Image 1: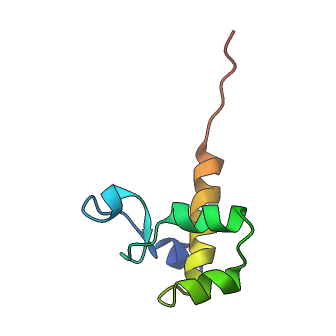
Image 2 (image 1 turned 90 degrees about the vertical axis):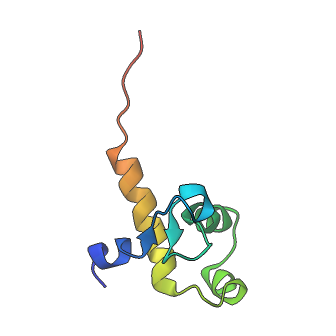
Length: 78
């Protein structure tokens, strides 16, 4: 699946989870997925815990996060 197609799985709606990026309009935030993975939860466990979640959704969350970090700019403060 292309990067653009994966990123289209991430939606933002002020009426869903206070506007945080979520997966396909579900009440599962990108943040939840990233925190779980960072905490050592395996992809298979996430898919079991959230049956509506698809493997591509997890990939989309990772791409979304990497795009945000890629756009980050750091300036030296003197």
